Image (cartoon, rainbow, N blue to C red):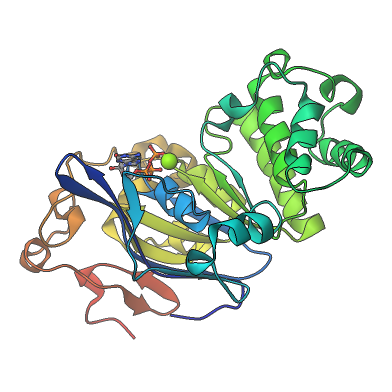
Length: 321
Ligand SMILES: Nc1ncnc2c1ncn2[C@@H]1O[C@H](COP(=O)(O)OP(=O)(O)OP(=O)(O)O)[C@@H](O)[C@H]1O
Ligand SMILES: [Mg+2]
């Protein structure tokens, strides 16, 4: 795997202890990210996307725990071994910020929009004057009508407007990386596109790197340049978005792409993905795979490199370079 000075996630595993069993939500995830990149993370519900995001933000709470062999390096800092107070002071919001899943509900309906900016800044020792100016600049950047929105209460705004407030808020302390978890998922398609264009613009103008998590493949295709496909807590395919869309290697990526009309362009090709729970033995996708072989039911595949693509599937065991 390539190394990066920006973000490097090594061997990340996260489990939840529920009653007497452990649910492995993220399993040995490895990836790197370059500065300025928009990295898409795609996978169906329960595939571990949010858990992975929370691990990078050190936001895993009991009953969840990060396996001690995991390592996350960000610009030379070993995030998981930092003191919690140092992580909060030096990293959170300032270097890495977050737009959490279902975040529209995280705005406080009794506080005006501008007060959310004051609140966040206050906890980082930034003065009110500095914040007012920056908040206005950021609300404009996300194309909100500052005069109306700054003094409004969240319940007076539409879902798309609230989502844009949260994106502006995540930029307050000028972070280098923003992790956006399902940032456009509850919105209609036109609003989605409008916000995705704003995010692309932020990436271009400010150079902010973005990890964009979504379960909608057209959204990932539109926003990102590189993509990680997750299934049952593992990365099953990694590569450039246009290459994965044109020629998905993993049967799960292929099924995902074929299940969406927008990508293939014709309704005839649309085929729902076969249902089934991930297999405990062998390849987790063996219960739903249309190319399943005997080995897939017994052994667990590693990631094979095919050109500049990584793919966790025995179909490529002999083609790997
Ligand atoms: N707090 C928790 N306690 C117990 N199990 C959890 C907890 N949070 C997540 N899990 C489990 O971890 C696995 C991964 O969940 P996660 O929320 O990371 O998936 P996701 O890919 O973000 O899904 P979605 O698309 O629905 O947001 C699931 O099996 C889920 O049930
Ligand atoms: Mg999630």
